[in-house]
Length: 160
Image (cartoon, rainbow, N blue to C red; front, top):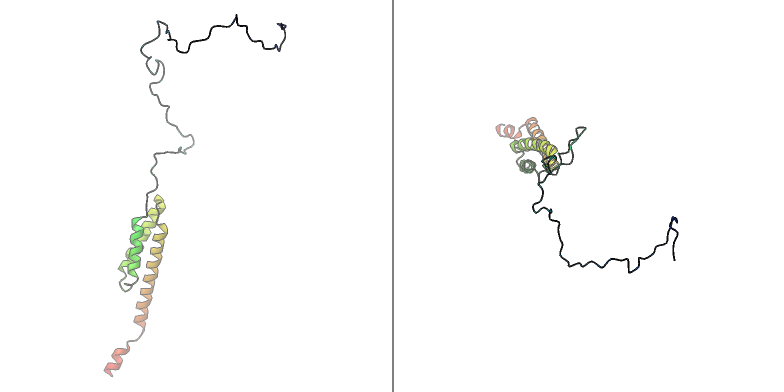
């Protein structure tokens, strides 16, 4: 069956055995041309930049890209927050000695600022320490004022 050479969609015809080439031996040795280089060319080729890496990304509008080597948030709970809570807890039974409560307030405020700045855990613990120490100091002040206003009844009965 012969097809028209001007036909835009010719039918596919398999080549005859006489026109086909012999099969390729996959195990035959490869003959390289005599000009094949035995040493690879230098990298990078002449005329190219010497660095193999692209230049670093430069942000356009002042926002930096994601930095995988950026310092992460510190692990664990802030030590000053723990110390503030311990000092506030110790200040409860020692409410007549206001020093542990004052230390708890100072440590708590410093710890709240540090946890807000670094993102470390312990902000609520420091806040609780400041609240507990403030209540303890307020209770102590009220107790001392109450004790000063009540008349001393023991001396009037003895001296009578």
